Image 1 (cartoon, helix red, strand yellow):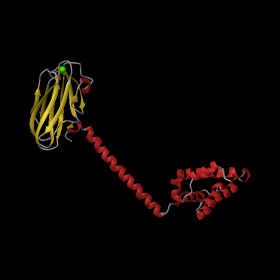
Image 2 (cartoon, protein in one colour; image 1 turned 180 degrees about the vertical axis):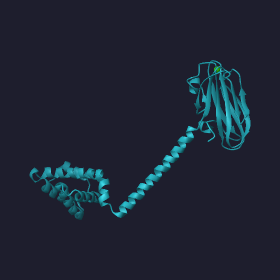
Image 3 (cartoon, rainbow, N blue to C red; image 1 turned 45 degrees about the vertical axis):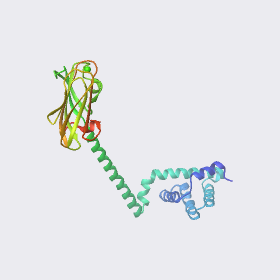
Image 4 (cartoon, rainbow, N blue to C red; image 1 turned 60 degrees about the vertical axis):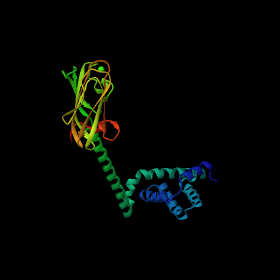
Length: 276
Ligand SMILES: [Ca+2]
């Protein structure tokens, strides 16, 4: 009678053709090891019988062959353990064994599978790389100044979005009050048509698109929305935004609205550092 725990383990290590096959291959590959050889021999029988009785009988045979002096139960246990080990050994040595035992059709199937994986990986990396490059070009070049009229340049950088409610969101180099910022780059116009450009500012703002002054409120004020209408051609158009802060709170939110569509935020995706 085989103990319950061994039975359970045997169920886990279910017999299948792959196991039998790999054990036979390992048997052939490592003929110098007697236990593996005996398992290999037993697996040949198992292969023929293909039923549970056959598996048990096979394991019993193995236990006698490999562990005569340890008693039946210990022998079966060792055998099941050996089987488990061989399965993991097979996984480890799969690559090595493949070289010796792989058939031509297996080789072709594996290579085709490998190539498909390589191609898909390259496509994925390409798309991702392109997306990364694109994202890297998002935003506008910024110059930061002390003073409300671009008096002393204190730093520069790139701002992805022009949507700020606090100076630290623009740059940590900016002082608490009395500063100005100039942003330059391109805006990506999705289609030609009339656009309403909106700026909520605190304090002064000026927006030029393609050299035209579209929005202007160059004064000290609490958050105020100003807008201007302009016809824009599809494509990348130069944009220049000037802003100053006197004291108190800061804000600059940009939106736009195409004729007949909703007013939406101008996102980083629509702004470009360069024309590339
Ligand atoms: Ca203010």
